[in-house]
Length: 87
Image 1: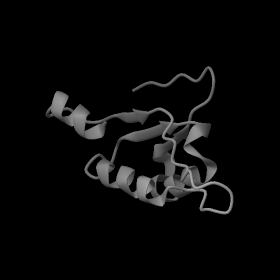
Image 2: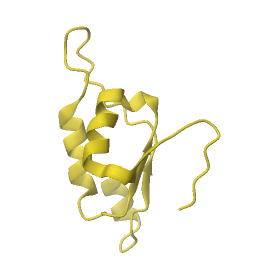
Image 3: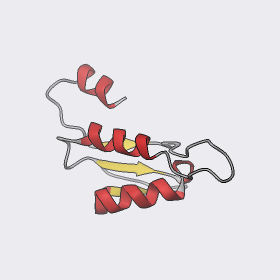
Image 4: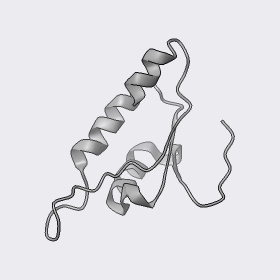
């Protein structure tokens, strides 16, 4: 999606990625709870967009939220019902 946005709006800066990222690994009980490859792919796609925020909710997964928080710091925003944000 990030690449499509860059192609559609060349020369414009990315302000935020907003939505559920579904970064659970899907391997079921006993498997890792985080799709680490998915997290790394997102972080690579965000390279060059150091000011862009990532606004995501519970369906991203707690483990992925923790990893993203470690790498993005204050750029990671936990989405909640009724939340408003200014871009």
